[in-house]
Each structure stands twice: as structure tokens, then as C-alpha cells.
Amino acid sequence: MDRLTFFSFFPPSLSHIMAKKPLLCLLILLAVIAVAGATSSSGAELDYSKLSGIIIPGFASTQLRAWSILDCPYSPLDFNPLDLVWLDTTKLLSAVNCWLKCMVLDPYNQTDHPDCKSRPDIGLSGITELDPGYITGPLSSVWKEWIKWCIEFGIEANAIIAVPYDWRLSPSMLEERDLYFHKLKLTFETAYKLRGGPSLVFAHSLGNHVFRYFLEWLKLEIAPKHYNQWLDQHIHAYFAVGAPLLGAIETIEATLSGFTFGLPISEGTARSMFNSFGSALWMLPFSKYCRTDNKYWKHFYGGRHVGKQTYKCDEQEFQSNFSGWPTKIINIEIPSAKEIPESNLSSMECGLPTQLSFSAREISDGTFFKAIEDYDPDSKRLLHLLQKSYLGDPVLNPLTPWDRPPIKNVFCIYGSDSKTKVGYYFAPSGKPYPDNWIITDVIYEFEGSLMSRSGTLVEGKIGPISGDETVPYLSLSLCKNWLGPKVNITRAPQSEHDGSDVQIKLNVEHHHEEDIVPKMTRLPRVKYITYYEDSESLPGKRTAIWELDKANHRNIVRSPVLMRELWLEMWHDIHPDAKLEFVTKAKRGPLRDEDCYWDYGKARCAWPDYCEYRYVFGDVHLGQSCRLRYTTAEVLSHYL
Image 1 (cartoon, rainbow, N blue to C red):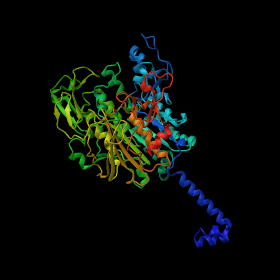
Image 2: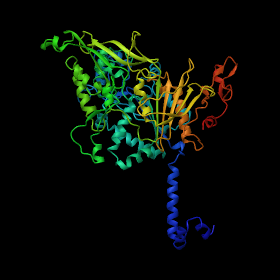
Image 3: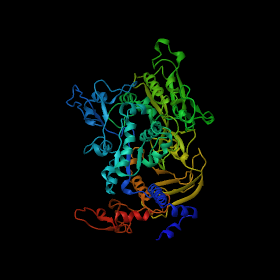
Image 4: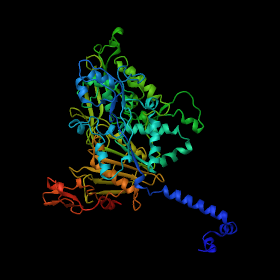
């Protein structure tokens, strides 16, 4: 191309300048190329080899190891540095008092027991199996199946990063004692430098609250004009799995009567241990109509900081009977103060009982703990912790509703349609602390109704479906507020399918602050997954909600269905030939050899389009000899 022909591609005014000043021409051309290159590198085409996955585990999902020497009397098993504490069932059974010393914290200042201290393990080994062993390993497995799935699909060892934390601590203490959020920021930046691309965040249960607090903490570490730029550079997608966005009801049970997690300890022991943790109140249920002004962000927007944060509730809070929840969360009998002699105010056996009921707002703002302060020794400690570490947290009051995180791609994933607790009835047990309360009844949400433990129907505001056995549907589905006014909804079977039972509704109208429920059919005995997808309301951002029928809260991260869907979505996102905003739901076939099986009715491998019979020495049954016809890449190419 000669000089005149080259200049003819530019406007006349610019070509005249170029002809007169060739050096200036070269500088302009280089600048244009640089800008174009930067634009293309940050576009939709992502390099698969550059992505990282960062896992933030949930409550009690990280190993804790001893960081001191503790001699346990009357037991041959002592605690030495790096010995497993959470969870070592052998030492728990043989020396429970020693074990508790390594677990409990001071309820006021969150320091370790004078005789023993524990710290979270590091790396992937700290979150895969809590109690490794031939029998206990599979029972305590958390993220192990997830890691195996990644390895099967060729993910590099340095591409999956676990960020365990001490799940006993309050959010502010995580930073104060362990600099956890500083380290998490460095983890994202290190992953970006190591692999050259952004990360995918996988958070489960309490891990979502940890990640939310990190996003707020980050605002105070990065200049406001660079905040969104940092997020876009370091985080490609956020997968919120089983997020208790409005808290979890079982936190109340653990606080008042104890939750043993299936361990061989009494409920009273479990209660004493749980209430010593700073994180005990992190998942308290709270109202979606009440918010707290941020203490520090006022400075960035020209506001004037006056005193403490203000806790404000909308009119809807006082117009609704239950803070938007299905029913009153706590119904508790306490002795009548008029009937109790002044010298015996702490006695639980005196006076006529008075039943009080408390909504989510009255729990999260401390009203409930103040009401039972004279009858329960833990209430004063919990009220102090609530005021210091939550309501008065300068970074964020975690007991306030979420907004959509400012991340390009957000996927909110949870189980549904299982029998889930939504309320409790407590009464004095007549026993001393910590067994001074007893649960007299439980209210569940299930199959479109509220029912007591005895099966009696209860009046209240029931949602369209129920939760995931641990977190109520109202709390899990709050992320539907992150969807825009037009939503595409797809319902498909969770198992492999040919598309005949897939239902699709496009551009369904969705009003903010209202649930969106598709009018779709359900076949009996079929577990479905319902997708709510929006890629238009926020330019350059995508939001998706996945509801998995019957997926259990604690086991959802081990669900093969979830791992399959996550993998297909990630594969779709990074593939340059992807044509749709989200991965197609038209069909689901086997992705691995393990997904192929023998169909005894037809005397052949099931899914013949995907699987074939191919015996390999060592196979012990027909299903084991059913293997994929094609390579993994060829199979995945069908989902673009």
C-alpha cells in the first residue's frame, strides 16, 4: 500500500495532517492500535487458561488447628501445635473439656481461651474434608467433590484458590486479628498477576456474608473512582451458593437451645460454645425493610457525619406483621416480672409465664435480647456483641438487606421446595443454664403452607415455595430483587434430558421488591432447575438466579447437577464462539465417562448419541464400560 492509498482511509482533515506530519501520523496510529488492543482484551472473549477460581467456604466449613500445647488430664490424647481441633472426633469423644478449651472464645473481646488457641488451616486441604479418615472423611467432605470435578476437566493446580477464615470471629475481628480482608485483596491481585485474568468467586452460606463485607471494606481501601475498575479487572463472576441474604432461622435455635451439628455433645454444651463465637449473630434473621446509614461513606459524597449510624425502617416494616417473614420468628414464654420477687429475678421457676413474640426486626436490633436479659445470662453478652460488632460496625451493618454487588456477572444459586424451619416456640425448661430453654414447637414452611411440628396448619404469610431445609425461601430468594423489569425464565429437569420437558417464558414482567413466580407445570417425581436470567437491565452486566428443587443447603456444593451447570456456564462464557448471553438449556447430556451408564431395559448404554460400550481391562460391571464417544471439548461444543 503506497502512502496516498494509506491516507485515503482517513477523513480528509486527518489525512491532510498525516501527509504533512508523518511522525505525528505514526504516533496517532500507535495510540489507536493500543486502544483497540486494550478494548479487545477486556471484551467478551476470555482466555480459559487465565481464569482463577476463589472459594470462600461457609460456617464451620474450615478446619481449625491447635496453635498451642494443652495437656489433657485423664486422657492419653493431648493437643499439640497443628493438631486438628475442628474436626477431630476422636479427641472430642475422649477429652471434650480439653476440646472445648481449644474451640471457645471470650464472648466480649473474642480472644482465645488462656489454655489453648486455634487457627484456621490454609489451602484447599483446609476445606475439602473436615475430619479426614476412612469413615469420617466422606461424612465430613465439603468441597472435595468440587475439586475432583475441576481436576477431571483439566483445571490447573494454581487456578483453584481456597481462602479459609476463622468462622468463629465477627467480621471486624477477622480483619483486626488476622488481616483477612487485606489478604483476600492480595489473593485476587496475586491470581490476576499469576494467570493474567480475572477470578470466579464461589461462596457458600456464611461465605457470602464474608464476601459482601469484603466488597464494602474494599470501598475504604480503594479510591472511589477506581473501585469498579478494580472489580472489573479482578472478578469476572460471583456465584452466591445458598446465601442467607436475610439470615437463617436456625441461628436462633443455636443461640437459645444449642445446635450440635450431629456431634456427640449435649445441646447445652453446643449452645455455650456457639454463643462464645463472634460470628454467632452474623446470620441472625433481619428485616428487608430496615437499613443502616454507612458511617464512612458519607464523607465521599459530601455528607456530614453526625454521631452513630442511624437504623431506619420503611413504612412497610410497620404495616407488615412479620417484617416480611412468613410468621413471628420467636414465640417465647418468660416468667411474669410482677410475680417474681426482686431477689429472685434470675430464677426461671417463679412467676406465671407470659408469652412474647418477636419479628425479624426485633431480633436484629436487640429488642429480643433486652426482653430476656433478666432471665438468661447469655443475653447480656450477646447484646454487647450485637451492638459492638454488628449494629456499630463502621464498615457495614451485616444485618441489613443486600443490593446487587457491582460485579459483571452475578449468579445466585440455592435449593428450594424442602421442609424448612421459619419459627420457634420456646419455654423455660426448669433447668439451670445452659439448658434453661426448651423448644416446645417448631413452625415449618412446606408445600405452600405453614405447619407446626405436630402437623397443625399455622396462619401466616407463606411464600410460593419453601427453602432448602436450613434457610427459608424468603431469605434465599431476596436476590430476585437484583433482576430487572424483564426476565427470561426457563425450567428444565435436573437430570440429563433431550429437551422435551423444557419450558421457556421470555420477557416476563418483574416488579422490583416483588417475587417472580413462573406459571409452569411440574411433573410428579421430577426434580427441576428453574433459571431466571437478565442480561439487559444493567448494560454490560448479567444476573441469573438458579432454583434447584430439593437441593439441601449443606450438601448443595457437592451436587453433581450444580457442578455440571457451573461448568457449562463457565465454558460458555470463555468460548469465543458462544452465541447466547447464557448457556443453552435446550438439552443436557453426559459430560464425563462417569455420567454414562448401562440401560438394562434396552440392553445398551444409555444416551447412545453420547455414550458407547467400550470395555477397558479392569471394568467390573457393564455400566463401568459405558464411556463417552467424543472428547470433552467435542461434547461441550454442543452447548454454545
